[in-house]
Length: 66
Image (cartoon, rainbow, N blue to C red; front, side):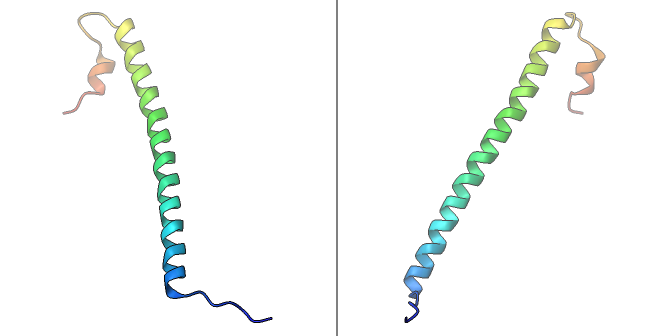
């Protein structure tokens, strides 16, 4: 049986498809991870806002930017 050789075009096409699929999965995984992380931060901020007094608290001041 003779081994089939891949042409340069087939190799480049296969690499392009692999790269596109890898990028898509990485993008979707990163987006979902960020959504979960930001969702937790938003929930924390919402719970802090409902439990703090109108004058504020030192905990929210600790998270503010300098």
